[in-house]
Image 1 (cartoon, one colour):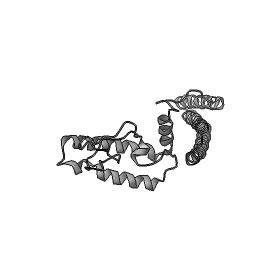
Image 2: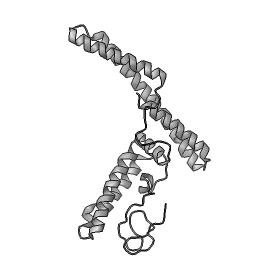
Image 3: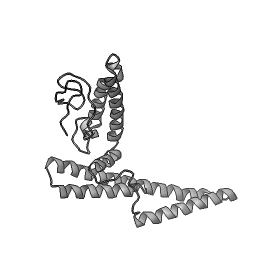
Image 4: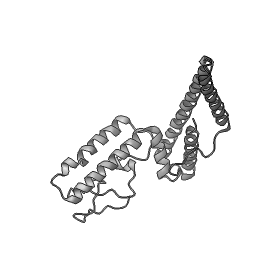
Amino acid sequence: MSPLICWSCRERALGPHFCSNCGKIQQLPRDVDYFAFFGLPRKLWIEGAELEKKFLQLSWQLHPDNFVHATEREKDLSLERSSQLNDAYRTLREPISRVEYLLAIEGARKEGEQKQHAPPELLEEVFELNESLDELREAKAGGSDLSALKARLEAAENNFQEKLAEVDERLQDIAREWDAALDNNVENAARNKLMARMNDLLNRRSYI
């Protein structure tokens, strides 16, 4: 992170949120990501209670009510920071969005990237599911018995839910590998492979 110079006293502000010299609220530097916003390393295993505690603490510190009698710049920064805090919390509290965000800031995933290459076995299942849905619509229109079709659709839904759970479990496993790689200062090539695997799983997940 680049050194942050306080806009008010022009001294170096050691903290990411407030100047350690004069106490003024600071503008968030561009190179501070959501993990750094909460004072966390770029790890994928985050204790929910710890994240919520940090969120509540920062919510209180950055809340606009604390800057009613402050300068206009401080009021604006409070509103900006509170909005950034909410965005950061929403992103990091959910495991999937956390992985997507990590890959994005590491340059391994482009914004909105998904569904580049559909797995062949999923394409076939999606095709069969669409056929069943078409048959269900036709059966409804013709007043036919729907029980068999509904059973097929329920079975298909259960199958997709199982596949989704499998993908999420594999993502969790790789997330643990990622955190261990950071702890052990593993070389970039190995971390890039982990990110590629997570990216593939996210793309697969988008089809389910």
